[in-house]
Length: 154
Image 1: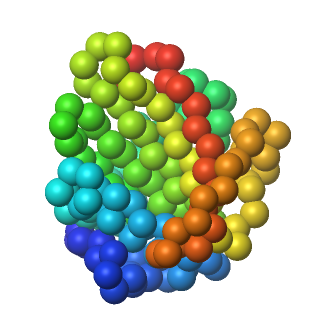
Image 2 (image 1 turned 30 degrees about the vertical axis):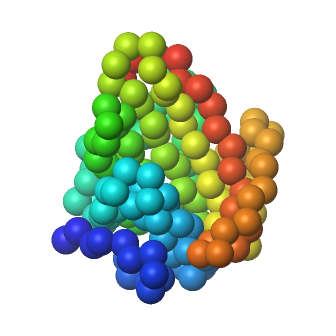
């Protein structure tokens, strides 16, 4: 069952099993606000078991591009296309959010982004490979993020 993420009334719906559910909900709401303001897009998530193709897509890119395997359980997924860009988000139980930005037109921007919820430690699988910058968010507290450019075709 899909869930429209409300960035005005932040809810932990679907994220309750996360030890950082409140801040992960804020991170998810932060993404919803971004897409509403920038693209007038309603950010909707669904439980990861109902979106296995999207989870597999993200995991394939992580594996093939950087030999990465995320150790945490995926909780929710959002997959959509807006203005010629395919976006796929996976929100993990640990508080990690992974997003794939994939411009459909050849030569466009293609990258994987990582965001950590406030209070979440950098996962071991990412700690030695990426530097995380900090940014403040009213909805999510301090967000730490990093990214890499996708080189292959997906």
